[in-house]
Length: 101
Image (cartoon, rainbow, N blue to C red):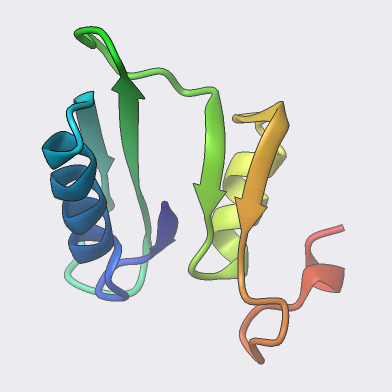
């Protein structure tokens, strides 16, 4: 998950992590953030597996974007697997896919 700090990244990642842990998956999570209070890009990686997970993997299967900077940052660094899924609100006035290409 990636987006501006203060947009719900931590809450979304925590809820997703708690849900999947209760479903019986092993997980390892990692949060990266800028040294400011609100607004700059941050992201949260969660690795899930049926077996114990010991580290984070930067190649993701599912990427949730809260804003276009997240997509620009992670898509162009090839962090999303070729078979991966990208989730974003294409109708958001703040998310103009034409600005990414």
